[in-house]
Length: 257
Image 1 (tube, helix red, strand yellow):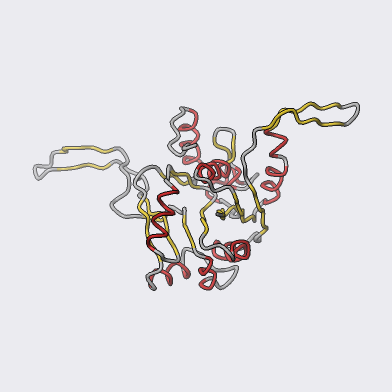
Image 2 (cartoon, one colour):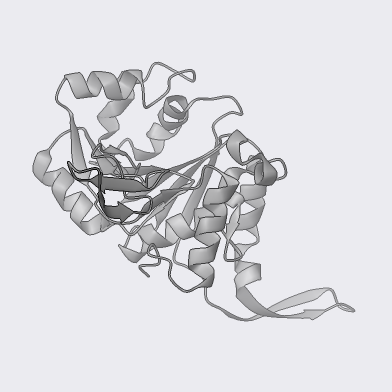
């Protein structure tokens, strides 16, 4: 089974980091967030990746081109210009890197790589900036039971403010520091799709989250897999620091491997 990962956007809300590198290459614990996402999929036996490149995509190509060297113990003979690999512990990944255009929208990027999954019954699809402790096995089982063209992982984001519970006498009976969500579910990525969704995407200017998903929803072709535990996008420097802190404290919920 294949997983497509969007990794071509500008990441303008994280300009402190993305002025020099693509957002999926921003590091958490010394590894790009893209690596963390791929490790989640790999834990569930999904090791064939198609990565949609755009902004500074060459940096992602260089990362994977040199991955084996970085992961291995090596002996370098400078005089003879020889490199000897002593040992390596690399992930069993097959990575296809496709330039999908610098200004292409999310739907357009997906449509450009669909020929690589044309013969698949289903495939995974997600963003290159979100982490979760998601059970991908359960997600796939749910998708197959529902038999819709799209399954989206629905999650509840952590609120921005503390919440008060107030009784009729104006007494605060409970305080919750930044509770999860306001009762509404949002898209957390981690889709499972049929290749047939390509017919709903017009071209490079199509935003996946708008016309395609709106039309598919009206036709009853979108199911929601509810994920009630950890999910965190990396939209801002605050988000990045939060993820880094969790990793540093060995408390990263997404580390399921």
